[in-house]
Length: 65
Image (cartoon, rainbow, N blue to C red; front, side, top):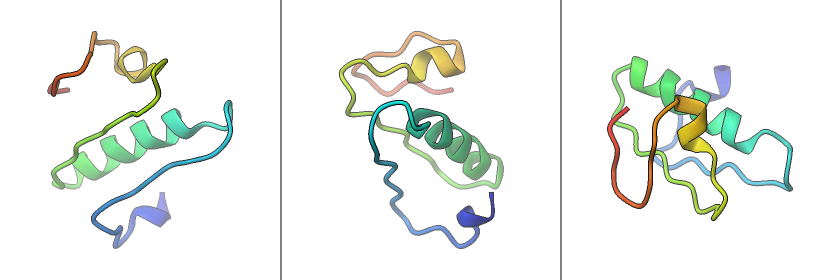
């Protein structure tokens, strides 16, 4: 994911439904965390499936992954 080289402090993934926003956001978060960056992944989607991607139950509190 070359676009993460020298990434800005904040990244936003937007677009219409079904284009892979959650997948790219989660993969980016993992890549940045493995590179030693502090990462906070936030979804504003009321039907978010970020928890399913990581295989954990998440809600409206910070959940370490």
